[in-house]
Length: 61
Image 1 (cartoon, one colour):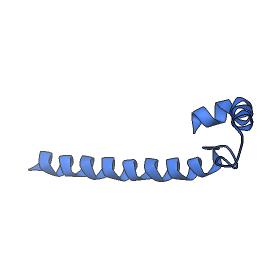
Image 2 (cartoon, rainbow, N blue to C red):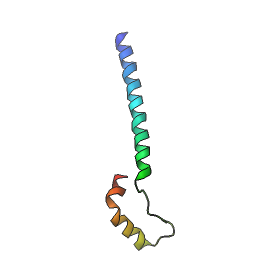
Image 3 (spheres, rainbow, N blue to C red):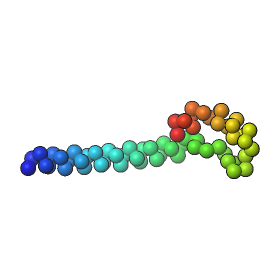
Image 4 (spheres, rainbow, N blue to C red):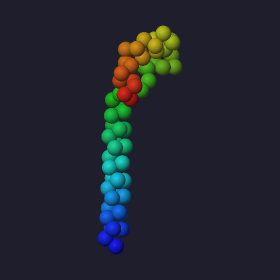
């Protein structure tokens, strides 16, 4: 019986930490550039230049 309670506690704790990780990832993704500004109206060369300038943060995002 004690092992079942311990397992329930571990599963609940895992769910809690998964939810925290999802929330933190969501907040961080708001601050990272995930697309070039004016993506549908920008020329291809402008998008490539933007990607070259923001390569590291884009990969991180």
